[in-house]
Length: 98
Ligand SMILES: [Zn+2]
Image 1 (cartoon, helix red, strand yellow):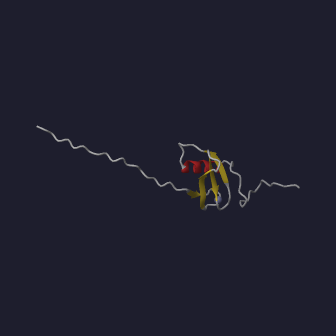
Image 2 (tube, rainbow, N blue to C red):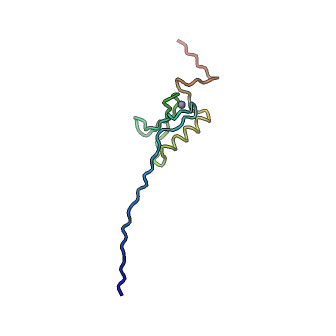
Image 3 (tube, rainbow, N blue to C red):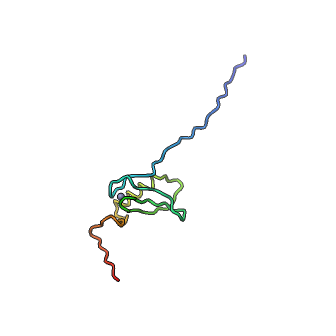
């Protein structure tokens, strides 16, 4: 008795995840935070196009776009993200002399 073996072709499924590249800004609340690789390479810039706050992170292959954003939000609430040009930072007044 010959049993027929059905050879199943296993289709390699490539899960295509759409990773959003624009996130909500923790400072101004606008969906205008962009994660983009730095020109120099090896670095990733997270910057808000609305209020101007931003931070730079070392590029990590195991990290995804959203990971940089999370780090950015984390840093923001930790006070490690400097205010942008538009963003007013109460308390810290820089007096420029010259
Ligand atoms: Zn913003």
